[in-house]
Length: 450
Image (cartoon, rainbow, N blue to C red; front, side):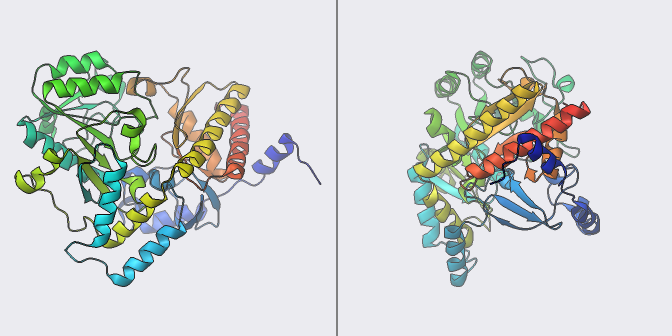
């Protein structure tokens, strides 16, 4: 048997760099009809080009250039079971045979709702929606109705959808954001209503004393946060932080909302609230709840959720609980077993630790932190970040150079630093990924990029 040395493996990888010319050409062509050739701004300006795919299977994507890519985007988080899992495919095909949309109720939506309420600690009642952005709006509306207050506290770097009232300070420049202990709300988009800033208070995350002091004024309807900061980084809450926030919200009559669109059904069956043992008043979910289908949910205290039926609070949506999406939801939730989380956790931890070893051996300063199911790589950070201001110090150009180099070596990773794992990322795939990382780091070090 022939055994290749690490040097030979690196040389082999470098000699087989992938190209994406057909994707680039297709994006240019499609821009005649689709603005920018993409249907979300978060898919724009990807290096070396936004990609066009033909199919996905397991942990892999196959693009129009014929490339087979190990996928760590995973749909930006949803594909916890990987691409095209058979139980989900079977459930969806069966539902299609029964019908698509009824403007009425079905047994499958009740089954999916029951599973959510069984799995999520805060879920005394729930409702389905179609996107994280809209269920976040539903949660904020409930909070305002329940408290009679209008202001909401959000945190720098936390993302709660693209609507005007919450697209504040999601990725602000530090210069525009003002003092660290008194951030200035920074608008996220041209055309955004500037006066919605009057209803939002922006604070740094993981600073309990600042939050408690602001809540003491008694005018805050809700505190909305990611219980683990995964939109920017994979930052853990500081010891006692979530517990302190919970106590302060209870004491001041403020509704605590956990945005678990990323963390829900990914960090644990019951999300970050199960993992950390802190129960919010309301929670929002999306992404991993249906493994790629457009499903979201809001869940929480019965007295709050029942305001949709008896408290005059409006919530609607033509596609809420669409039967095919509900079949996908039920199939996904039934698949989320302890053994599955253990498997993903082992793979993710091996990859995370492999990153640390490669960077240390190469003399690259980096922080690699998070969870087995999702972690974050921040080049240039000497210590784990506690909040957005810490993350803003990472070397983003160098990291984009790394993800670009990895893509040419058959590994697709998000340019913002997050790495999502699925049940299909086995030990062999992890080893292949780490070989690509080692080769890319060696190459970028030689070029002076890292």
